Amino acid sequence: MRGPKIVVHPFQDTSVHPDRAFVARGLTYDFIASLTRFNDLFVYGQETSFAVSESSGLRPTGFTIQADFAQTGSVSSTETTLRVSAMLADTRTGEYVWSRSTEAPLTPSSLLQVQTDIADRVARALAQPYEAVFERNSVEISGKPGKDLLSYECVVRFQQYWRTYDARQYDDLLSCMETTVKTDPAYARLLLPGAAVCRCA
Image (cartoon, rainbow, N blue to C red; front, top):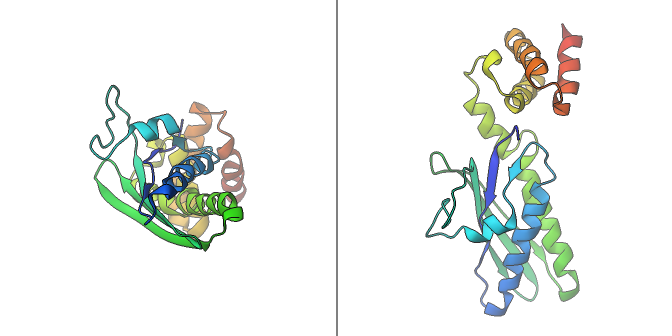
């Protein structure tokens, strides 16, 4: 796996009615499923997520996980509204680097669809290029020489370059691409950036 590792803590139910706790559990499953569509991310499965509790942090009893990010959140549902709050923490520093709250109208017949839509919306805000995880990674690698970047980091560097077209980044980016093609030739995500950089030469 080339990109960052994310563990999703189970969403906490904050609804007035305790019989709504199943909504938070279902949203956790949907959110994990949505994140797994982003191939560069390593997303821990639901078994790991539900083994992680607030008391154990990122070290569940019996085994250790090494996640780069941890997502936490809460769910509050009524008969007419579903509200979700999500936060992303850098597990290496403990710093919360992103948060988002969203809500949607709710009816008994629309619960599953609304739940899935919200999970997809939050996952995209976390994992798409130029969103939360990307921005955090781009800051971390900003001073790292191109030849020392890992495959995923090289793609992040390209996306930075593509956004600004800063000519000062070109030589460093080209070095990164050349190194990654040699060390990780099967990395499909590098094909388009590599072609674009060569065309700009």
